[in-house]
Image (cartoon, rainbow, N blue to C red):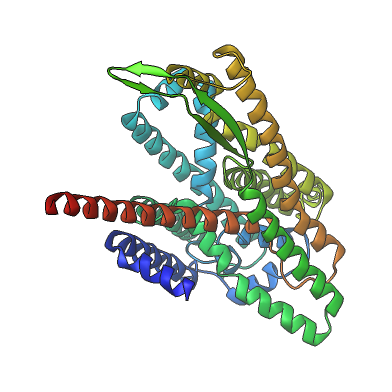
Length: 437
């Protein structure tokens, strides 16, 4: 009954209802791309290729989790949103190293629009690189119906067009839907695989490919990961702040104690998405070169999703991007200065530089714990895949982190709309009472 009441409240707000329905409509359009194959592909040979147990097949299964199974189906939207995510990461890194770009980022709305346009141009270039590598993989493995420049041109143009269309869909969700469009599209792609993965596990258990104990271990690990994410995402460190009494006009303000909440995971799932995107390019290149240069096969084997080097690299990247992304969002000096201007101080800490140093220490400790927890949860399924032979599916830990993280963010957005609606209702009721008087 409580759930039905909450759903009724959600759809009772016109703006929120329209945003949710618009988002669902965009996601349906995005899923239609999974039924449009790239021209000139032998889908039977592709299914055999993607299902092989070698390094290339395993790696494609890993990337497939971020494209809603479209990469594995060799469809029009195979590249998904990843070129744009990689471009965004590169622009943030360049923004910290190039003064002109850093100044542009500080110019407010205009600067953000210009940088966003540059990001799209960079995403277009990366989409060409990814699509060329993807097309060469198809051609070198004999999956193309005809191997010539006509196929290459049509394949590259199809993949690039599909990628840019998905980026446009993500922008529409951000502007007119609910939540961050890029995260929601990745979320929808991962969720679309969950039911087929459950059915595969059931079939494998019935056929005797895996034991009941192995199936129970798989289910327990994934449930534990999701529960841990939900629990730790709500974790926060509350720093007490006391406001001194001040006389403003004829009124005395201040004299109250409040808290500044610092979340354990302050940046959500972006470090996980960045780490996955960062790994995509070099591993794709290694797998592509391994076809022509046997020496590169050793590098490709080292970076297999079930390998130790892949998991260690992924863990280190998640830790790095957590600190990197959080440092661009939080500025201890600015926070301490704003607190000082508002007449607030942390008990026992001198305002100014001492407070900034205190905030810096608190944030670094939280980011360290948060990044380690993100990294561990991300690599647990990799370890599970390595130790359970015959595992019927591969659901990366990064995928679960993204699913739970985005679900919590969307729930928070919906909750804010509901609170705003109730607040407006209270204002209307208060105004009506004043008029009645």
